[in-house]
Length: 209
Ligand code: PRP
Ligand code: URA
Image (cartoon, rainbow, N blue to C red; front, side, top):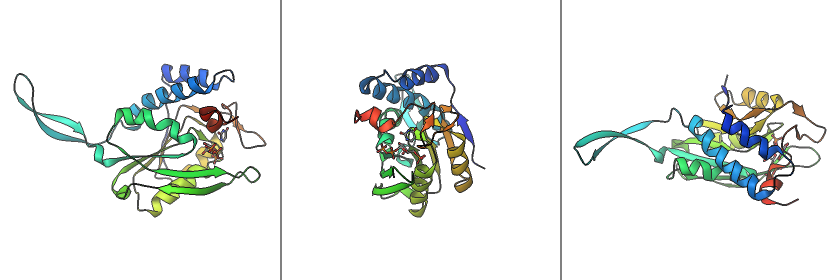
């Protein structure tokens, strides 16, 4: 069974509250998502491998530690997942970025694939899939399945707001994928939107509604 990490750091919770507020506009929404992604990134990357590197301080030579950035990939689910990339990149600037385009059909709420472009060596990397909303879990499960088809074996899912339905679906279809989330909300409404949630994440990031 995959692990569920709820990142309840006070700064994350504070910023999320502002994001949830319907009066918060796209500029602030984007900035807060970026900040939270950086903070969540500390937890998501807590155990990534370090390598020895020989350096020289002003005092002497030493063997120091560095993150092997070549081993990491960030894969946002378009569109909303894009809003979490910059925060992670500021932690690991050399991480490669792939893109998976999925949208939910308005009637069936099932995901439709429209784009996929991944780093050539994606199968050798730890992949962090980003998407602020884990609702039915359909989009996350399909994106993870696409990555597994390309040979990825080490995948983590980073979202902002989730609900038990989506968590359960990811855990049953992908028991090897740990989930990182800042909140587990109550339920889905009749349109499969998260309650209380924050509305449509893509629209709030890009100001499309
Ligand atoms: C939203 C969100 C997730 C998906 C979550 O994307 O960003 O990708 O819905 O829902 P699910 O767990 O039920 O699959 P949407 O389809 O609205 O596309 P967008 O990001 O382009 O707005
Ligand atoms: N997608 C969103 O953007 N918000 C939700 O609440 C559910 C799916």
